[in-house]
Structure formats: C-alpha cells, structure tokens
Length: 559
Image (cartoon, rainbow, N blue to C red; front, side, top):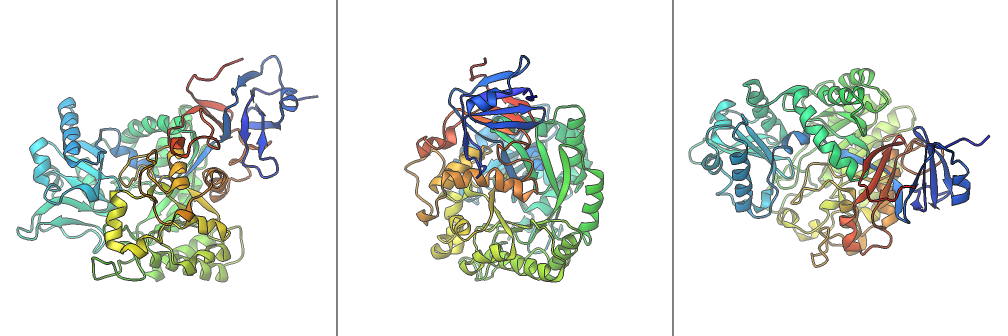
C-alpha cells in the first residue's frame, strides 16, 4: 500500500545535493522525514485527501542551510542598538537616536562599529559620555573582539588605572599612555566579559535566561527566514561564563514548541579551564534532546589579525612579533588528546598560519596515539594557511570551516593588509585550493561577528564566495587571487551537506534524500541562473525543518 504524504512540493527545480540523484522536480514529506524524491508522477503517487500540495512555481528548492559556525550569545548585543555603518559620525548619530528613543533602559548595549574605520581620537570613553553620561554604554565592534564603553560603564564595573590585564597579551583594558586611565577601549572577550559580568551583578543588565529569552527568539526569526534549519553554536560567550545558559534557553523554547531550529552546541575553552573535557562530558549527558545537543569541544588557539593576536609564522609588518597562542602547546595537545580519546570532536579557532600548523601537528599526533575512530575534528577560520599545510588537512582527516563573506576587499581587509603585508594578505582564503586538494570545507557566518557589514543570510555568504567581492557590488575590488572563487555547487554543498558532515549528521540532514529529515527551503530566485551580483539579494519563500513550516513568505501559490 502506498504511504500517504503530509506535504508534497511539486513543480519545482530541486537541487538535492545528493550525488546519486542531483536533480528532481517533486518531493514528498511524511511526518518529520522525506518520503520520496523524484519526478512528478512518482511523487504524486503519495498524494491523498489530506496531503497538502504546494506548487513551487518552478522555483529552486534546496536542503535547509546548515549554519556551521554561529554564536547565539552574540544576540545579546544585537537586539538593542545596532550601529553598523562605515561612517563613524553616523555610528554616533545612530547611537544618539537609540538613546533618545529608549530613555527607560538601565544600560545601552549594541554592536556594529567598524574598528579600522574609527579614528583613534574618536574611540574614547569621553565621546560616548557626550551622548550618554548617566548610564552604562557598551558597544562591540563588528568582529566582536573589541568593546568601546563610556566612563559610567567603567566606574560602575570598578575598572580603573590599576586594573590588570585579564589575559596578559591577549585581553586587556587599554590605558592612556599619559594619564594611565582607561580609555574606554577593551581588547577581546575575557576583559569585556569581566566588565559585563560586573554590570550585570550591579543590576544594570538583564541576566541569565531572561536575557536570552529576549534576544534569541528575535534572531531565530531572521535565521529561519534566511533558510537556516540547523545551527552549530561554536561557543556561548556569556559575560558570566555560564555556558549552560545556551542549552537552558533553547530547551525551554523547545518545551514551549517555540524552537524552530535544530541546534548542536559546544563548550568553549579560552585557555582558562584546566579540564574542559570533563565539563563538556557533563553537559553532553544533561543536554541531549531532539533539537538541542551539547556535542563539541571548541578550543581558542589564537586571536585575530587587527589585535595582532593571530599567531603567525613570520612577524607582523607593523609589530615586531608573531602573535601568540592563548594556551601553551602542551596544554592544547592535552585537551585535544583527552577529548579525542573520549570520542569528542574538537573545533579549533586558528586564524594565523602558525596556529593552523600547530593545530594540524597536534591532530596528527593525536591520531597516531589514540585508537582509530570516526573523527570530525575541525579547524575553523584558517584564513592564512601555509601552502604546505593545505594538503595535510586531507591526509590527517581534518575539516576546514571558514567564513568566505570576509574574503573580500573592504576597510577591515585593507587594515589586515597593512599588518600582514601584501604578499601574505593576497595568499589568504585559498579555499578553492582546499577543495581541489580533497579537503572537506564547510562554511558559516560566525554570526553575528562581522568585518564591516553585519550579515546573517547564507546567500550573501554564497555570493561573496562565488565572486570574492562585497555582496551586491560588481564594481568592488576582487580579493586576490580570483582563481580561488568557488562554484555555486561547491558553495551549496559547503552550506548543507558538508556542514551536516561536520556535525556527524550527514545521514540525517544536508541533502534532499528519501529517509532524511525534511529540511527543505524554496528560494525566490535560482542561484544557478541569477546574475552573480544578485545572489545575495535572493529571498527565501519557504523554510521547512523536520517537516514543519518555520517560515512562509506567502509568495507561493497553494493548491
């Protein structure tokens, strides 16, 4: 007897990302899973009196996007003052408008100012004091590695000239070279998390689950409208340091049937925990529900380019050092080996070429010393990777996860060029070479971290990976080398099946295949036929996750 489908999408151009059947015209869904994929006749055989028929009007249908690198904690800074603009004066104007429109807020948080575009003389606490002197103001840069605060925030948090670096050489409160007083600029997460934690304890900011029950649902709607069905959270950096808040918030939404995403999470170690593996093992036992799972160990091995904390093989051009790691190599290797022995996959943050090499060395030694298993270790970012190290990813069995929307020429990239020098800068983002050499590459936004533009749509990422230019700007400079542009099929695979593989879910999601979870999206435009500079403007007509419609733009004919 033929099984009756709950939903059939027909009259579609379905790119399945399944190599055994790359194209189809219809798909049937029953419950949470895909029942049948194929031609119109074979799929419509599953139609019954209760089947919902959805005419795709010839539009492109894809598997749901797997956002393989995100940070839900970043939403805490992005539901108040969004101040993303290239003009520093407009940044201040946007802040001023927000402060005037929200007089009842106890404190103002926000994000979006662009570090390389802010004049040094403007990037001081006194500038923010002129706009808002009577409550804390805390503004994160687009890359989430620098915070700018006013005097009230510093005083309320007890930060003064005598406050030491939180992590020597990695995270600190900048001091005026003449007066010794804090300038209002805070370098990297450990230091600004300390400030935010103290402000929360003093009652200026919402704390715990109350904060994230406000911010995460707000951004969830944007993600599902962008076609995202699965998210990997690569580190929940709550100022209080309580990483369980991610799982507690999401599982509460799940219990209330308000969670529209499948979320796989991590436990992140910035080099401050002696035994992160044991902590993660406890979280894995506690958080393992149908839509929310604690799974991966995330290790921060270095920092970022503009803070000169990325670990390089050769010195920076504008600083007489190579940067450094966040933890000694022996400590890093201990964590990796312990996690691997416990069957836990590790994602390593490595921006500089020396950090990438160290991570590969440690993974290689770990593979040799621990028993064989199905490993899904990942080096994320890997923007600058020495050519000799690219083929090692495949030989060792390590994935690369990266952010191609940053592999463009903008003010942030130009500032990196000043620090790296042109030759080294022009050798970044070689991910076509990675793929050509057999490396599995997944891509994710690292949201809401940005360079200059705050972006969250996978199609924007896909366009920049295809053009090596700013999304929507055909006259923008091309990031060298132009031969590193990726094809549309490569980019779709990186945002679907490869992301699923990273999470160990390739048998469940990542392609439109009978038996897999029904994670399906319909796009308003066809990425294969669209002008390349229009790809990032493509809207999502419909998002289905686990057979459930999570976003409907109302643009499709229903029959």
